[in-house]
Image (cartoon, rainbow, N blue to C red):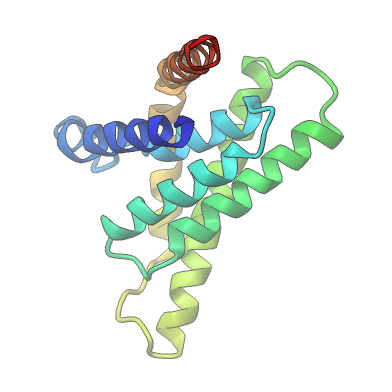
Length: 176
């Protein structure tokens, strides 16, 4: 049942991304709420549910983007694994806002780099007609980082609400 709650959370965030944030673009850039959800969930999750979140978010983002299929799915799964490994094995301190900002910047850059390389690989072999200019992505990086950083705290609160719903549902299910 918790996966159903995760599914509806992802659908809700995707609908916000599609319906609301195109109206709030800054220089043609809008934040990716599913990307933020994957980052925060990977950093704070105790189980391997982050893989489900990353996979489903990536599939939905692939369906709604014009990029080559698998661009977001593979990049978000690799990002989630990388963040999980980093938090469990390398970073021994508590994740605070300073580290979260650095992780957001590095994660955003790595996802942009992966999407650029992945799509241009298929473009080079004429399997895709979409060419992505890296200078264009770098020009959007700072604006997208600031926009995502502003929404990081509300996304963390949203994750707490999702965890609260999961916890209360499972407690009630065990009692009955």
